[in-house]
Amino acid sequence: MSLSVTHEPDAERYAAYEGDELQGWIVYDHVGSTMRLLHAEVPPVMRNNGVGGDVVRAILDDLRGSTTDRLQPVCGFVVMWMRRHPEYADLTTR
Image (cartoon, rainbow, N blue to C red):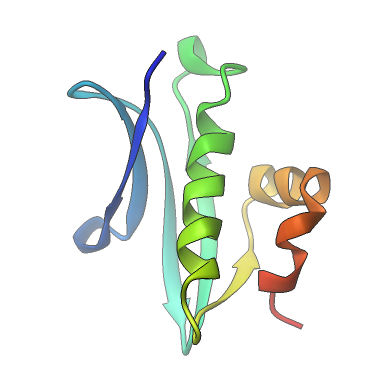
């Protein structure tokens, strides 16, 4: 499976696509300079294929290049994923 993850700021989400087909997404909002990851959605048929993790990683890699945004994981999936990937812990709000 070849996924591309796209930032869709008008929809306040990052979305994963295989070709033109939407495979999953994470919605967010901003409170000040903090990005809050609110909800991850992956259709049942696509779960356990790494789609959600690919989206989280794309968001965090984008934030890594930003000097102002911090992250507040609200979504339980994102919290769990970040616990498994402590290399991104420095992006969270303190």
